[in-house]
Image (cartoon, rainbow, N blue to C red; front, side, top):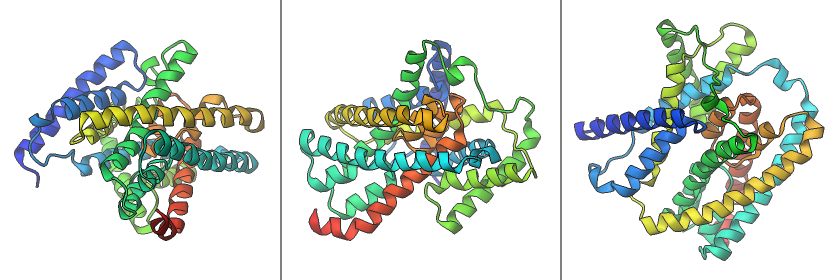
Length: 353
């Protein structure tokens, strides 16, 4: 059980994140209840780390629980129409394979050539998916762990920050939740909570049993999708729960900066901006080429190909009223592709690097 001081800090961070999220909503920032807490917690972690208790870390069980809630939101949007056009899915997944391999090569060139990282650090920091798997395998290969962790976390954070903001500027108006959009159910009430808790728990258990990639979100997605496709139950999520899930996940992401030096963070941010910019250009080119072949809009394809985390990019899709199931399917595939490739080549890479 965590000390009382750790619990108090967690409560204070969530209260701060809620306040900044409300301010971000008033300003019109996309994903206000995700980006607002992320920025607030990130500033605390980098500017005021001495104010945090020794050994403090944002509770992983709390983040896990609310990631499961996000999974339920996504899975509830799954319908038979998603799988109606198998040839369209084959085209987009094939393009995603090429984008993933190209992004890894581009990132390696940036981190090795401009960042002057050693080969192991550059290789594992360059992976456009499989955040925790890349860190674990990179550590085994002798990579510089602080730099590797920083680049992998920054990849997710920069994408989830830049993409919705860029789409808002491109469209010339607030999008997603900042524009009043929501996928919450207005009729949902407190009586729906036991069902949601049971579904989330079942999803986490399923993920552990099947060892699903990104299981904290893919397991609940699978349970909610099965309920939705079978017609047994339509999960109803209240707006306050949707907002709270984003606040918790955003705060947890921001606290990833805790313990890292400012100079290291600033250098990492510069490299990450170059890396993410290159990957988004590659994703944008692939998305533009696929528009006439798949009949999907540019924003949906771009979000599907963007190298963010499954949870965070699913939130972007939810906020922008893109098809969250279509987007999540592509991100799970990207992670599987990356992790499978790293796992198969791990022993060869350790010898070479």
